[in-house]
Image (cartoon, rainbow, N blue to C red; front, side, top):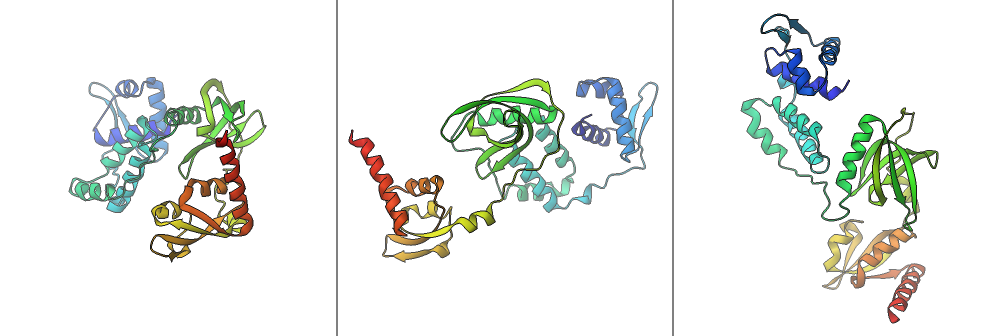
Length: 310
């Protein structure tokens, strides 16, 4: 029994005075027996639905029962619409379309323009400028597998691009920063893993069902741990890359160095990821201190230069 179908039936009953079981069954492509079970569930949830037999009969919400559509403020409805619209840019499907329609049905006509204006004041587009074309179709496959408790099979590449075949039970889709992941139980590793979608290839949803197991959500906030590992290095940057450097620190870390440059106290951890960040700034950035980081940068630059000498 799907919750979204129950909510849809409730909204239909609110909009229509009466509707038959057969019409609902055809609308949702289920049996009339399923519709009767849905109506029983709606009644158990506290919304009184009664059935009328004969010509023109069907189900209807009892006239004395009312849902207060003013329970949401303009700010509430604007926030909900904004969030649903942002998700729809990456995750399509009838669920979001239906959810948007349901939320809009709660908007009184005299507040529609104000709510629409507020909802469009902030636009969040989660789709990438460029990148893997597989991300969006993979999101749809994983979302379906989550809903139906079906196994996923795929090839997964580590950071050295070594691929291994995996079968996993999906439990959660995660958007962290600009990257999508899914949390699943890996049957190869016999443990939960956080899989990055950009490292996945040949993703398929299997017909085999799995019984969900207890699990803990992945740890996504490493702020405290990273803060304990970070040091501050001294960079001299050209003003043309200010915006890019500000993705990692704040204006308080900048001090002018002539008209064209800044000295920046840059947060840094001595690992491959952070050295790659420095190299992304190209010749517009020079590491001044500490000496061992500057020396490591020079060594890596020499290794790159040696490749191009041949």
